[in-house]
Length: 294
Length: 263
Ligand SMILES: Nc1ncnc2c1ncn2[C@@H]1O[C@H](COP(=O)(O)OP(=O)(O)OP(=O)(O)O)[C@@H](O)[C@H]1O
Ligand SMILES: [Mg+2]
Image (cartoon, rainbow over all chains, first blue to last red; front, side, top):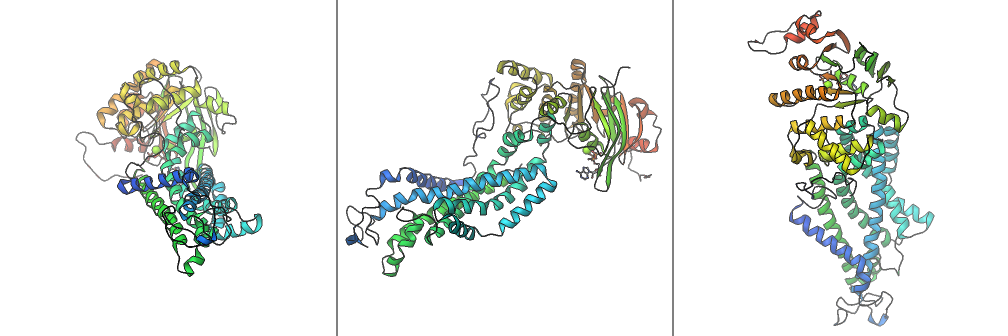
């Protein structure tokens, strides 16, 4: 995060660079590092998957339906006769992008609400808290179904609906941390100096709770991925033929019934691996941000 | 004597149904130093917050540097100007600095807000301020967690002085430090006053500190001023029972614990 302005150019020799910028993986242990590596790989596949995929999603031949692994098709074929490995590689993009949209949107909303609540306190805080409590009562999936009914089913609609449903949860967690941080005397010192509230929040308050923000975002990513897969599974998220792991789980259903579970299993496994990795990492980041709360 | 640089008249602050500060008035002469003493909960910090605009007075007025600051600042320029008039150093060295920011960065940030100047000019000024408060180059560029409480307070003092304020409020600013460091910082504050002409409001429960550093004092009890006058007179010849109690409750060599008669 470049929130800290590059200031005095004097001697910066004995300054530890690692503690500035984004909180890294320090203190998350071997598990945290392995999880981060898995996630990095997943993101890489999401980006370059289409280049890696040996076949396209539309190269379908029903005669290959449920054919097992062959020399050229390492994972065999789906029920519709597409190359399973290619579909997994292609599906990574929307499967990762969806939760990413949810996380970014929910975090922005949640951080803004939390900071306003913490900064203003009093009646503003109370009103915002009530609004958040009402929103909190809506299950994300229900909101996504409603949104799909109104705006039409798509990944974007589902993602935004989930973001709105998750934002209150994020706001609630971050509000407590923001209130704690706001009561610290360095914030009061900045106010007395005459800095504007938004500048103090942007340059000092938010960076000082960034550990928790990153941790919560990571954990949210896991939830969002499962929910989006479920939404796509019931047909209200990503629309086939666009490749997506959630869609694949749904489309593999008929195969499961016929004794060919490969497609559902493979896509489900991809989801599980990413979600477990992201949860384990998120928990460790969270524990660390709590532990380092001076 | 010239016009006081800071005047509080009838300051009152009510929290809910509790009156933390009750009709407090005092004046601080230019270049002078005023102590606020009183037991815990007597309203000293609340007065400091009123003076610095961190809390808004329920009643009463505050004049600093010839301008009224009883109401919240209306513009960014006004806020900045107030920042360049009255500054504060808090008690807790552990929370008074941004944990992600070195002393140099936090002082520079203040310089940029108030005085601007090129990067090199600001850097020179940061070094000057560090010298003034006795910080070496390593300490100046270290993060707060790598510094001792005394070093952190020196940074907090340098940061407060960076805006070149006319008035510095010290709210128990050395209370958390050990005695030898306290003495060093108090001496330093005396030197800074000679060098910069800044006026002090010193909030302390340590009467020895008060005697060393201030010309005048007010004694607060339950939000009210119970005694006011020259520090030496108040400490040597208190007119009020409460002040006497406060003075006599400070442990001294030969002091024996005994039951206190609370008025
Ligand atoms: N924000 C607040 N809300 C409600 N009550 C408050 C608030 N701030 C202070 N008080 C109350 O006002 C009274 C005075 O508090 P203050 O902090 O000014 O005392 P103090 O003289 O600085 O004490 P100490 O020596 O312990 O620092 C206390 O009873 C305190 O509980
Ligand atoms: Mg106090």
